[in-house]
Image 1 (cartoon, helix red, strand yellow):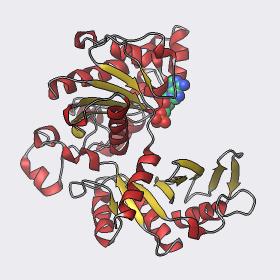
Image 2 (tube, helix red, strand yellow; image 1 turned 90 degrees about the horizontal axis):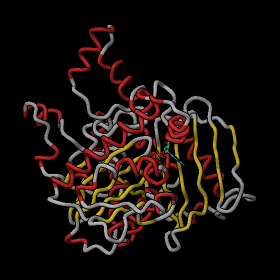
Image 3 (cartoon, helix red, strand yellow; image 1 turned 180 degrees about the vertical axis):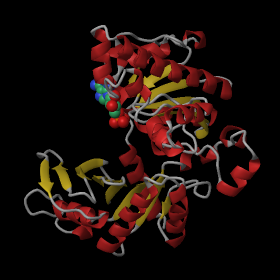
Image 4 (cartoon, helix red, strand yellow; image 1 turned 90 degrees about the vertical axis):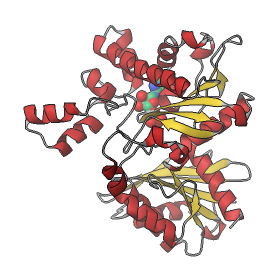
Length: 399
Ligand code: AMP
């Protein structure tokens, strides 16, 4: 089957056309600046990247341009759109009602719509992408794969906040967690790669990218994760603060005359390693280089980031009464040996020893722990698009 995987943000759209039999990507790309002006980057497998400036007032025009590129006579990879068998959509928030991927029907659309409140930047864009595909490819099955659904197996002790129950009952305020497609894919692949028994396994996945989250996966099911009601909770991230005393909000708002919403923008966009490095960068390549040149703020940013990851791993080992495997993924987890080394330096008490030579590798599945390490540690690239493609095929075949 040819599956078009679509990931819509508020002003952008990423896509991949995947052949589900070979799991090869036939073409991929992105639309940027939707609603502003519009730019399509398109790349067929083995071909050059093409950049086209074209007006994209809404996601419908953006998807229409993607479809035209896919069937373009010279650089297209399909003869006609009839060859697209299904569309898989990444959707941010499914609230508490959706616990797995679903074929999109009126009920699923209603839930995505209801959850716009909880995912105000993404859910409306996800809906626009879904509606555009339905309009431009009528009759084709669409599947929604939710960032929150893998975390729905968390028990109440993990997802409830210790605040008055009325806020949970009236407004569904609780921990939801995000990056679920990545945590599910990576934990599942790790179980196979490391030869673990799924029904008797305790895996911690550290998805460390510009957005970063960590999850505890027991017997293939998520029992805890670091992001919360929104992606702001948990680890220190590129520009997000992660965990902090909520009283900080009021304190700074009062001192600086800021509104809560202005302060939240600061916590989401101007904090994290960007802030700790004194606004040097949110990119670990820049931070590493600066640290190597003696920049103390960059060194602090890397150290604080790694320390928070190590603390979460310790708490999730406690949550599962032990841990069999720790897996690093995401742009930082896959590439930044300096972060992996710093994180593991706190975990000797778990009987973990790192293979220094292996830590120089990047960009492939590899084992980072030495053979005598009590806990296996691996690095595994995530592939959310492939996970979405696999779910889409399974649901469409069975529907
Ligand atoms: P992601 O959000 O998963 O795409 O991760 C993006 C982040 O990964 C970037 O902001 C960098 O901080 C980090 N990253 C990517 N490549 C490298 C690399 N070669 N070395 C260190 N960090 C990297």
